[in-house]
Image 1 (cartoon, chains in turn purple, orange):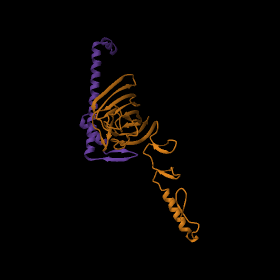
Image 2: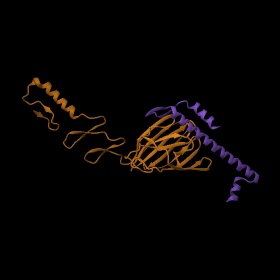
Image 3: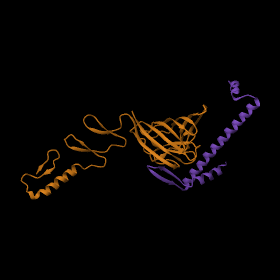
Image 4: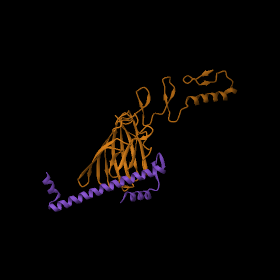
Amino acid sequence: MRKDEIRTELLNEHTTLRRGSDETGYEDITGDEYQAIIESWAEAAYAKELEAQAAEAQAEAKAALLNRLGISADEAKLLLG
Amino acid sequence: MATTTNYSWTTPDDTDLVKDGAAAIRTLGSAIDTSFAADQGDLLLGGTSDIFEPLAIGAAATVLTSDGTTASWAPPASGLTLISRQSFTTVADTGTTFDGVFTSTYKTYKIVIENFFGSSAAADLYLQLRYAGPTTQAGNYNWNDAIIISNGTTATAWANPSNFWQLSRNTESSGDPLSGEYTIFKVGNASEEPQLFGTSSSSQSEEATNFTGQQTTARTYTGLIFSASTGTISGTIAIYGLAV
């Protein structure tokens, strides 16, 4: 997903925000602060998605290389050891 | 005018007239009222002059103790004392909920995450410190962790510096919440650089995270605030003071 898609999804999922606890009470978060929190959440979620994509691509490249060499991951470790 | 031995309450003289008895009883009653007046939480304690004296309620989390002669309020001699236990549901952060939990009463504190989950299970769990104001400390968090995954593999992560301590890389879901226990040092007493270490267990992700962190801005920190990298959080968290 693109960052703007993530942001839209977060805005739809969290139409209101609040902070606090059952014991101390809750306070609504509105206006600029609401927008800033949604933006920071979108950035964090997007960064995590890029990380996951990079890890997946790295795993695929590793599997493809092992396949070309015709050896298993354990055998590759033996070679490096 | 005659008075009682210990409290010097006024009583009628033997020669006073019977018709003045009602007024004399009212005077005596008012004197007793005044002698035993106390604020909410006060205790009546026997004093050095053989009369009761009020002992004001002690500070939060202190206990009544004895030196063999009299009683007073003091921090518990040893063990854990519950300072605050709070539950919260679908909040962006815990706000002022845990402000004021760190004081000079204790040198070390335990943070027990009884259960915790986020609206986005894959979000990171953040912890930041708060100080007088109260203000959230926004930077200079160093941390590293070692994650043991259920299939026997391990992973590590670190940040230096960061805007938060990242206690877990998964906030988990309501059906499989996260639990954890942390010890925090160098808070509440003086301007110091706090240190935190502990472990959390993610039942959904089947991961155990061993965490250690430092805050390199020295302050007298008085509280903390929980949030997630993305989405709202829910849970119950308790803070204990560790007396030694």
